Amino acid sequence: MTTVTTRAAGPTGTTGTGRSATTPAPRRRPRRGLEAYVYLAPALVLVGTFAGYPLVRSVWFAFNDVNPFVGVQGFVGLQNFVDVVTAPDFGLLARNTLVWTLGAVLLQLVLGLVGAHLLNAKFPLRGVYRGLAMIPWATPSVLVALMWIWILDPNHGVLNAALRGLGVIDRPIAFLSESSTALPTLVAVDVWQGVPLFAVMILAALQGVAPELREAAGMDGCGPVGVFRHVVLPAILPTILITTLLRLIWTANYVDLVLIMTGGGPGLASTTLSLQSYVTAYKAMDFGTGAAYAVLQAAVLSVLVVVYIRLTSRKGAGR
Image (cartoon, rainbow, N blue to C red; front, side):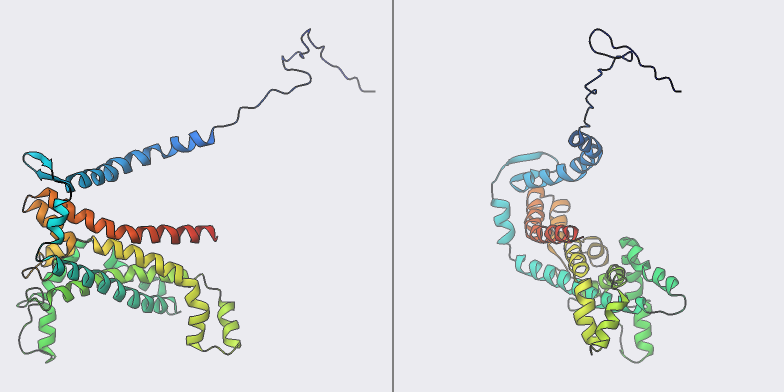
């Protein structure tokens, strides 16, 4: 026989534990929205300090006459932008920027696609070669520039020595000092450094393509080109688009390689808008016009940023 004991309720309808006999104590819901902002606060502070403030400051400078030694001397409205777009060399700078950006990124895309397929094949020490392929991308830009300056040197560079030894040329070529070769040479160096990023990104997308899909397409009569077009390309296309947009933005803003290897020369043969912004601000000491160059380019690149955000949002929603 089992004896059941109960605690007598108090005069207010509570048990001996102090809780109501009929109504459970309400639970406090966590303030998830507030907690999210608390967790994000450190990152927001860092982004606002190191990205937001300089951006706002640059926009403000673009509408003012700014001397680095005196400060803001007066509001000039759109005059800095007018000076930029009406400058005699603006067309040349815009053309150089397009050649530099589009030429480098498109070549990186094509060679990266080929490299990704090669690295996706099965061969001995495949993992080692995949790691070695990332060395150019992992090398700091300053070191890349100095290394290629030595390789391309007309007097002591190994490239000129090799070309002369093979009988391709009869005299050294000053790749970085001639207006006809300076910009194409910079594009080639940037391609050398940027191809590994495309290759690795596309390789990761290729590994997500199920082998069964390739086999099924082959059984349906598709050749290698058909398999790539109907099976592989649709699977890796989002990765290609996102990587290409990122590289377009990065390359357009890239200053290190051009500044160290040619300084924008000879003359303005390899000067881009981003380099001109730096030169105008820190060498000509005209921060207002220099900021106008930067803001103008940022406004154009913001279109690519919007496209990138839309693509990443669709990719995330499709998972």
